[in-house]
Length: 46
Image (cartoon, rainbow, N blue to C red; front, top):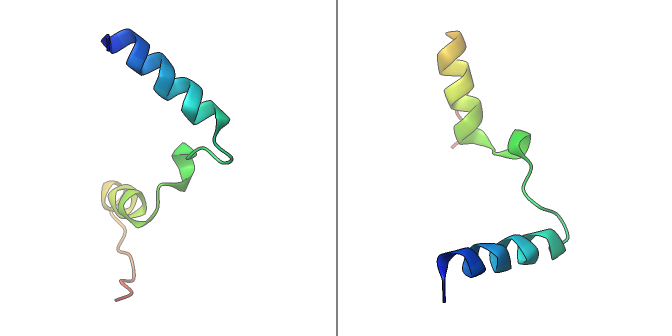
């Protein structure tokens, strides 16, 4: 399978999915990175 056709198939499959992942909903790892960049500390929940 060519790379381009595989890419197009994955894009079509993702567009048919119910709820694609939104960039602002990436979770704790992203929040920790943003807090570190801003110089804040996050409360860790084990």
